[in-house]
Length: 635
Ligand SMILES: Cc1cc2nc3c(=O)[nH]c(=O)nc-3n(C[C@H](O)[C@H](O)[C@H](O)COP(=O)(O)OP(=O)(O)OC[C@H]3O[C@@H](n4cnc5c(N)ncnc54)[C@H](O)[C@@H]3O)c2cc1C
Image 1 (tube, protein in one colour):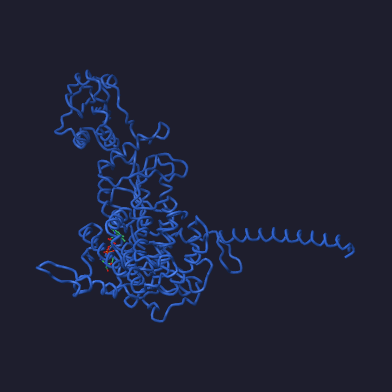
Image 2: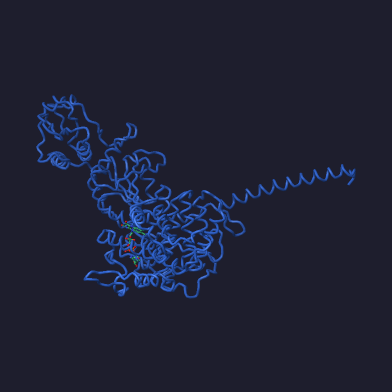
């Protein structure tokens, strides 16, 4: 279980979860801007300071529009992110106020600078109609100059500030929203189109602000700079102007329970590759990342099939996992469908048919990929590890892809990776960067060895781009890899400059990502005791037996790793894990059948009935004709 550490309860925004999201949005009196992020996504990590700063900047607007976040990498939220159709991170959704029915919101690009997003928020508010206007939001339309002039000299008991600006300006609307939570002042805006009005107020440049005092006297507002911040601060500091009591209900949606969990640090050797990382990566990829797609068809299905082909043939994993991948591949190849509901694939990945010796753990066990904080490393690290391993396996076992249609292609693994990353990888920015690198040089790769080196080179390019970024784990600084302590012979110097000895690098990569260097330590057991009735014959090879420490080892608070994975909260109550809810499948003779299986059965049953009836009619007619022809009506 990984906690939502990018944002905390101290930040001026609402942390939403699967328990609170729908209830918060349904019929809300305010509009909402929600960022669906993933705590492992580097771009989300980079963007989080801007999002927090934005939330602080518009804190006073919260009775009109509010800022929220939901971590799709938190296991508790997997299903809700799927329901909302979140495929990439970060995804920004805008939800109108007073939406009575289920609404998945409108997506827009908000990973931009703070001012642009703030102005987008103003536009969103103005998209409301009179009927669904957020109750406490002031009208944002400009006032007529005649209406403003009629206020002059009136004793109203409060200040009226008028921002005069041109049509494109957002300053007036922003100041109106900044002051909506304050008593003793009303802010209006007027456009600079009426020249005589400007003359009467003595305004020569816009934006400008005019102040009508509670006693009716009026004057130009005296601020040093004609900026939103200067106007708003001036008004907030006027005598008699103070903040209204904020409704106690605000912030009630915050739920950070279960997010403070810490995992025990697992000792590991950096010269090894860990099977637990790759299995955890496959678990996340099949059960979370791909599961956000309702169906696979066209290019997506082709990409998925090629990906399964490559992993089924090249993944040097435990027999139980390889069997699952091979079964999935056989099923995909034998199915002539052009469109596959992802639930059918999930049924297979979850082994609903209870096929013996087939199993992929549902535990996230990061070992070589564990981070010093929960939001760091994890899944993207496991994906790199998996693809490096696959390129090396393809080079070490060139016949492994025989009869798959990919056997002749030295680029098979890299092209599959490229398409997977571009189509399904949740971090869209990463996909775009990777695609740019592939476009530039992938075609130059002519052999399986060159493929291994290409991926190594590109990974190092990413490492150097991300060095010092917020997504960098301080305990695992981004460096050119392999570092001299791992491979001294890989490094040389020519005329004082560092150069790679690529021959040695290739040899090192082939050793590092070989089967012999993959440690089974910390891999989860697939025994029936732990996994509720899974088959006893898991097919583990003797050297790949998981060691004792991997089996539900105790974690802080007395919970096991498995319990943590399933979201045990801080109060010792097992939290509801919606993903674990049984899917509507039928149990017949102790076998699990999916709805797809049942539909096929019914279809086949109907076909056999029709076939038998036709056979009966055919033989009946033939025997009748025979009787008539030989005049044996008595037979
Ligand atoms: C295809 C792809 C593109 C990405 N693009 C971005 C991006 O644009 N922006 C962003 O913020 N994040 C991106 N990420 C995530 C980022 O690269 C890291 O995976 C993430 O920051 C976690 O870093 P890490 O410290 O675990 O090491 P990782 O970079 O994930 O490396 C994992 C392990 O691979 C080994 N390794 C390191 N370098 C090499 C190498 N050159 N060759 C072989 N093995 C190596 C090391 O053992 C290391 O621990 C991308 C991830 C992927 C899979």
